[in-house]
Length: 411
Image 1 (cartoon, rainbow, N blue to C red):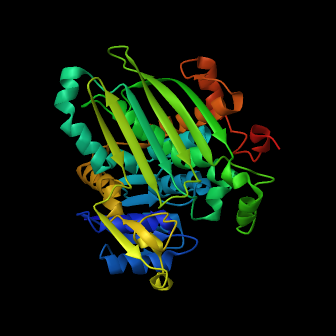
Image 2: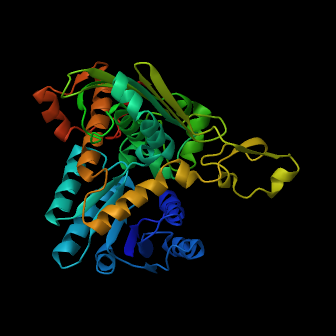
Image 3: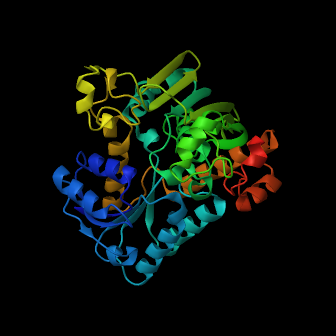
């Protein structure tokens, strides 16, 4: 039984605790967080996924667990990884490290985290749940014979959209690392890359060649919506971030030299039932589609009954309504791939091997996200094979991340 320690106790940590209820051979035995640790510990007990002890430091918890999962805010992750490396050097017998997407806010931070894990000789798991979605994995498996006969997928489209993040720090580009491109574009780029990858090849098999991206501030730049953010301590008149991002990444098959394309679109202004994940994969003579808002279940709540609703998100993440005809997803943790990414990581760490996705892969996703911001700033396609671009990306901080989004969006 793997003993898992959580660093962070926010929304995503709670979602992962729920996911572990469907995973064998792992339990949450420790939590370290600046806020919410006691409440999350109680939740874990109710879910039957462990009776975690609350720790005051990361180093202290490392001595008592097998695996540390970093679910803390983006701006704290590099320092946490370094603290874990220090604990490892001091004798902590860890078997692995997990980090929720994105690995970091920029290349410098991501490379520091990868180096910290290597210093501690630790196996790592990069948690990108959408690659583990059963609908995506099963569609690929079902079509593997067709792919062998006809050829691999040549175009993918992936989108993640909802009405906006839960926590105030997500809206602050200096803390989060940007806007929706950093927050959700990392998902869409990764799953698009994965859907293009020929069956049986590793997730990073295809070589990124170029990226064209656009970042815009649409809904949350309007006066009334800016004021809503102001009430949460975020001022988009001074430090705006994009609420819409779209683009395309061109990849090349290193064996056949065939070029393929992953399109992505992400937004924080999807005023609809709730979170929507939409993926399409198009191959020669075949295709598949995934839509997370397609459900076999639905519910209806009248105006009168709506007063009894305490949490609309019990039915659907990022739900925008509490009455009327609503979509019901009975097991979001499984639907979105959280359960399967845990199963992959637990099996890998228990067997002393690497999970499907490691921090090196997370580093490459960070590189593509940074290149997307660079493309948006320049208004031009970025050549990912150009040594000058590669060098620039290693130290690049997007203007939006630096708090200078007004230069990108105009005043």
